[in-house]
Length: 216
Ligand code: ADP
Ligand code: AMP
Image 1: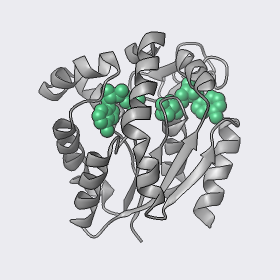
Image 2 (image 1 turned 180 degrees about the vertical axis):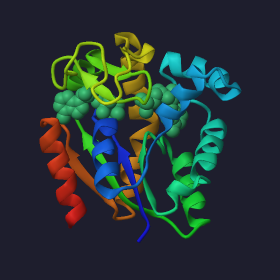
Image 3 (image 1 turned 90 degrees about the vertical axis):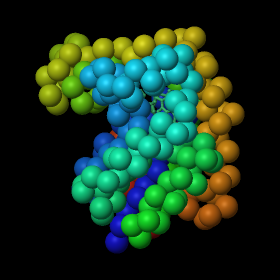
Image 4 (image 1 turned 60 degrees about the vertical axis):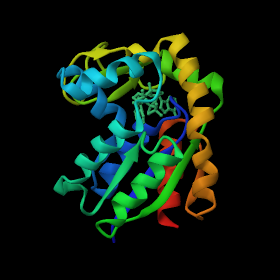
């Protein structure tokens, strides 16, 4: 069966962290729209140059650019049997585009895992997040520290703090999430495919909740 799972939730809820666990358990790719944008910025591509301004301010990149980027990603072979989608869709227009895209090769969104967390802990998590240069692995200076400070456990690359994790940008991102992305909760709930996950627990406990939903 094709398995396309969307992780939904505010910035800092733990979508990236949990997507990696799920992708490895299910042996499907983890597609993070934010990671793809950041790679393009790092490599100074035309897409990276177009997206950089919006990302640095914590705003959403235009739907046209984002949907085209995801369409290209879905054309790669590794997505044929499923994928974990992290950060896409971010609004109802993108959700409709995703449905159309998956339908075009016989797929559909099977499950949406909505990770909830109070604003206070989102801010705390983003303020302490360290991201790896090479592949976007994430750590937290208190809750999930790397073995060696500043170095990724997995690939040995340097860790950095994201420009959009600055306090003032984080508040903007949370507001944008509430106005533009949160309507997707109702959108997917009405389709009967939304599961709510309590994201306040430890990383391991949240993973356990996700795995138990998958077994249902
Ligand atoms: P998102 O992808 O939703 O923006 P991340 O997965 O990058 O969020 O997590 C944000 C930060 O919070 C990271 O530093 C991560 O290590 C940390 N984190 C993720 N899940 C938890 C958790 N359940 N408890 C504590 N810290 C967490
Ligand atoms: P993330 O890594 O998911 O936190 O995303 C980082 C930033 O990339 C966001 O704040 C947006 O500027 C941009 N971005 C990521 N995904 C999308 C998307 N689906 N639509 C528009 N912008 C996005």
